[in-house]
Image 1: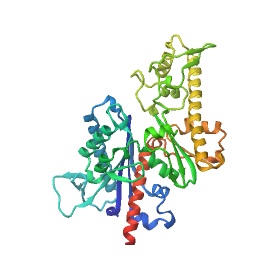
Image 2: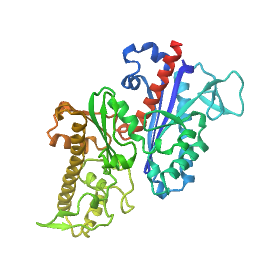
Image 3: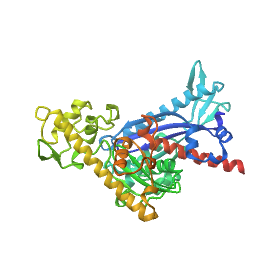
Image 4: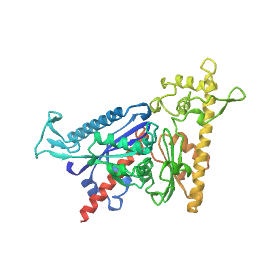
Length: 427
């Protein structure tokens, strides 16, 4: 039944990309059909929920105005409501009139779709959707402090969405209101790892979640299905090797290598931002142009030829001076060093994990996800002699794996709603 459907728009607001996902779940049908022992499992919620859309919006805060961010949010709200109306039209053709409670809009069916009208009556079926959010953009140098970042982002969320239906996930895995987030900004700062580790780690007794995206690598210890990091903010997580600041796309080449093999010698490179690791992975065929989800270093295009041109500049050359074969060798070397860096970070956390829980490495499961899962994480783990039956790759479709955090965020919220429904039924 439509009145028992829960619609959730989840937003992962990063400093570079804002990722979104809209999912829905018929709570009544879910409770009725689910096997009782599985009913509160994330994997069960994920299996029964429906994804209406997912998307990535490139939005580097330091290059944009906050007015533009508000425009992005408004477009997401309109997109959400359009998808919601289309879902209702297809799956509940008997519904003639609805009211979107969040935006206080009234719609009635006309011919093949819904049209908005200026006012309604008591006959309109009330529909609501929640907006759940995780934020890492507060670290962007667009803001003077994390507090300023959280405050400004929350204010813009309030301008676009009805605050009564907006919740942020905190570092403890709880959903809190915008007002609570404003009064305790550190509890929601850089909380993007929480939902992913809850969903992907729920069946794990002892595991490490490795989530590598465009910019960073999260290394989250998991015990008895729950994340157990030592640090819960960026600084503490960096100190404890639970956050490592390298990703697949955005690191400039000089953050990976300082010298490269060139014409039978080691050539020092220029410490300019001439090229990114995204150029390396394009040249090596590890990513496609559509997966090049950041600006290029020179503002030009993302074709293979343009990637070669940027890579040549790191030794102050160009395509007339450096051959493609030589640039392939440079790319392969950068990839090798990048793997070694990631391997070192993972090994440090493994050593810490063993000291904390007094277990042999063979007992640890490794859950890998994100854009870097197949490009870097799995190859690195295999080179570390981690057995294949210890490695579990958690990904969605080719498009969805990039926004896995946003999807997991929606699933965690739906589980909270299921738990509330079960408690109400018991009462």
